[in-house]
Structures are given as C-alpha cells and as structure tokens.
Amino acid sequence: MKQKAFTLPELLIALTVVGVIAIMVLPNLVTGIYERVWSTQLQSIYKAVENTSKKLLADEQTSKLSRTILTKSSSETVADTAGAFLKKYFKVTKDCETSSGNCFAAAYKNINGGAVELGVSNDSYCVSISTGASVCLQPASIAADGTFNYAKFIVDTNGTDQPNIAGYDLFLIYVDEDGEIMLPQRSSDDVTKCKSGAELGLYCLVYLRGNNWKIDY
Image 1 (cartoon, helix red, strand yellow):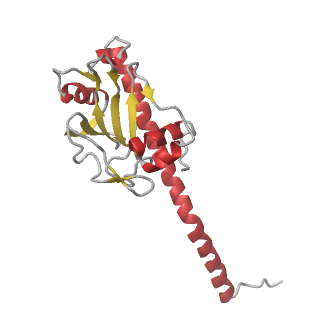
Image 2 (cartoon, one colour; image 1 turned 90 degrees about the vertical axis):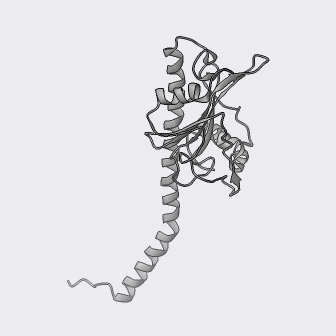
Image 3 (cartoon, helix red, strand yellow; image 1 turned 135 degrees about the vertical axis):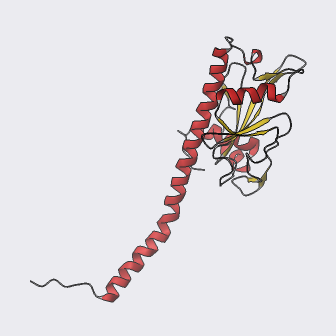
C-alpha cells in the first residue's frame, strides 16, 4: 500500500510551528543553563572561602581568626595580611594588589538594573584565581573597643565575564572570628534586598544558601 507523503505546504506549516515553539522555549532553556552555571560557580568559591579560613586556623594552631594573618593590626599592611592569605591558599593568576583593576569588571548592576558600586579601596587586596573567580579581600581587624570586625570577601565568581550582576555572579561573604561564614538570618524580604543589590548580593547568598543553591528570583 502506497504511503501518502507530506505536501510542501504541510511541511512548511510544521516547520513554522516548530520554529515558534523553539523561539518561545529556547530563552528559558538558555537562562536556566546560565543560572545553573552561576550557582555552581558560587558554591565553588563559597566552599573555597570556608575551607581556606578553617585551614588557616589549623595551620596557625589557633581557634581565633584574630590571631592569624587574616586579621590586620595597625602596624601591618593589607599585603602582609589579606595579600599573604590569598597567595598562600589560592592559586593566584593575576595580582591586582589594592585595586580591583583588571580583576573585576568596570561596572556592575543589580538585578533590577540599577548601578552597584564595588566599594573597593586601599583596605582590600584583589586577585584573580585559577577557577576564573576574582576576589577582593578586606582583612579582619580589631576595633579600639575590642570588637572583632569580620574579614570581608567580595567575589565575582567568573571574573570579568558577564553578567556582572550582584546576586548572579557578584557576592559578598563575611568570615567571623571562628573562621565560619557569617550570614544574616533569613527573612521574608531577602529577595527584595537581593534584587536591589544590597550588600553586594549578600542577601541573594542568604536566600540561595537556604534554597538548595537554586537561582529562581
């Protein structure tokens, strides 16, 4: 029995339908892929910060970050502290010293589209590392009243590459005196703060940490 073939108009209609479906679905697929990549990059640098802080305590045989090279005294330089830490525990591929320079993108935005400032000054040491991430590290310090000021890591999980958006590839990570990553308590307005770029993506990190690292905001 002879099978009936598709006519040219039928093929054109079928291709048009497939094309329309592809146009509708493809952007969501591409976005989902990027979000998984960004999430994986974030988890990698998060674990690196956590592990190296703990290793520093073990190497210097102390339980307090204030007794290590990650805490700067008034007589020390940022290179002596943050710089020394980064060079010892990370594979540095580019040394930007006390400037974000070529280690970070020239401009960043928040998820809502507004401009975000890195706020990096001479009190931080910046590098790019072998994973492709960039880090500006402000060492911990002890205030005049004895208060411990957390070590502050500003990280771009994929360096100068896009999207350069706080909450997607730009994050702020604090490390406390026990070498633990310090995060604010979760709250109902974390996503709102996240999208505004508050604290350079810190509230996005809070949300993601409690959301199984899934970017869905």
